[in-house]
Length: 419
Image (cartoon, rainbow, N blue to C red):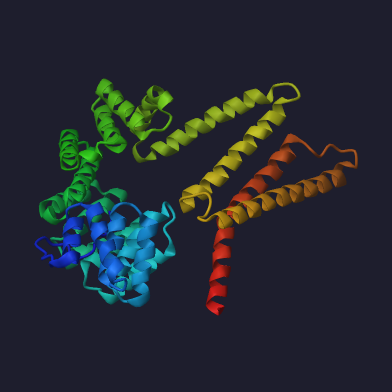
């Protein structure tokens, strides 16, 4: 849920003039028009902090998070106690950060709470950050405070519903999502649709399947763009729990094709996802276990190939380790390589250097250990020693790719501060 700025109640007056027109366009989802008006104003008045903050919020709505962060930081340089700017920065960083939320997002939200402790919006944003950090207990405390300060705030109730679903409290989530819908005239169709989706998920968890389908239908009416893979997957799970196998499979098939991933294997993956849906939120773990068993069986079979078998297994294991090591970097920071050609080239060089040096070092240590125990004629270069050296090298190379850009940025920042 993205922060929109301003109060949470409906009926807020929008001032006239170019800035007022931009606010009206933003409130009505006309993001291109809002951006056009704001950039035009900033061309004439580059120091207009209100226009620049509104531009950042507009960019945030269109998922241009990096641009939003850059604009709102310009506002905060001149107005470090601007609460709306702090909230917008925090929200943009949450959206930009992927699975690993930057510490700055929490710092900005906590600063906003310090400046306006009686504002529901500040506690809502801090709750969003904490929920994104998987600190559900702390997030629940903040959102309960927001609801206490402003019980009829639809934004607070919606955030409460989202957190309660994560905290495995479906009955509380149903109640909170219903409150968000009841008070939510100022939320807009997209947020109301989200509230209906949360309600549908919670209703499904308590086996009120017909009501869950009704909420899902309401969500799609509120926001037709919502009819994507997540919606079809949820509908498929509900049908499967109702033992409507045919309709369930069709929904999972539509969801798999809508995702755009491995479309050629959609029929098989749809069936697999349908079966795994019985594990609920633990479906990814179940899938990982199944894949692990299959891979282990394949590797065991390959290992029986005379002479070449163990080496093939070693190569495959190293490929798997390398894939997961670098995929982990990409998943953690949102992209594998930093922005900018120079930063990318230096990061690749650093990672490759670490890979080669560590592999050589571990192989040298393995050679020394084996020959010291078994003599100079002992066979030390084996599939096992290759896998150990390669795995350590891949993991440390991935860590270098993650850490080197940050060290470089810190070094450049210190030099800039000295200058």
